[in-house]
Image 1 (spheres, protein in one colour):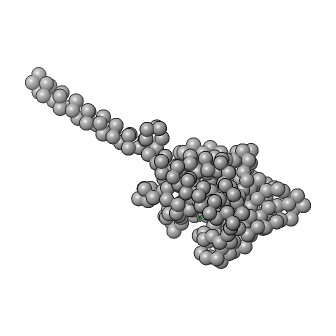
Image 2 (spheres, helix red, strand yellow):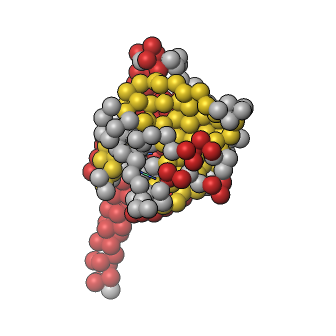
Image 3 (cartoon, rainbow, N blue to C red):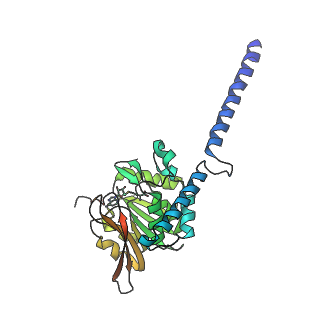
Length: 256
Ligand code: SAH
């Protein structure tokens, strides 16, 4: 009996301690609005993006970015797409390392390229270069169906698992060489390439619907790329606009 009375209060203190610990962990993960603790940082990131869009207007020929694009950027939890050690930097307007020698793109570039696609809610989009899956998630917020291809297999697997865990059921991800597009799901309303290509892959033009847009960085590896917006005309021809200098990791090829 004595033992019982002595251990019971100790046990309850231990449970109380655990409950307090759980409350602390939970409150550090959520803020007053019930969202994750990064909501304020995400909002600030979107303000930075909107300001940069105004500053670069003469180069990008793009005025204010579409409100839907900014809302998507404010919704997608970028910190869930980067390794834990760089999560505190997730909402800085900069690319970050994601392992396998690859990066997550700069938020402003993600927003700008998404805006250039002029997505409508019923659209089907193809992305080449899934990386961590962040751009795919942003597209998933704006279009009906998103298809994304990643050449580095472990990254492709990881991003597919991550996108599913975050509830992006409209995003289909697979590993492979995106140079050939994804014929089984073509044609697409829009195509985005997030790696620097030496030239425009012909299959991507073929897999674009008339009136559709392809946004792609083209140029030499690591430097000197230009962001192109290619619109497919009704007659199958294309109109190309050269927007601004960008720097992406190279589009690599599977051994032929
Ligand atoms: N879209 C990513 C950026 C990824 S960086 C984001 O949301 O942040 C570009 C990615 O393209 C890299 O992961 C690289 O492995 C991939 N890549 C390069 N060449 C490719 C190819 N031929 N097909 C598919 N993916 C490719």
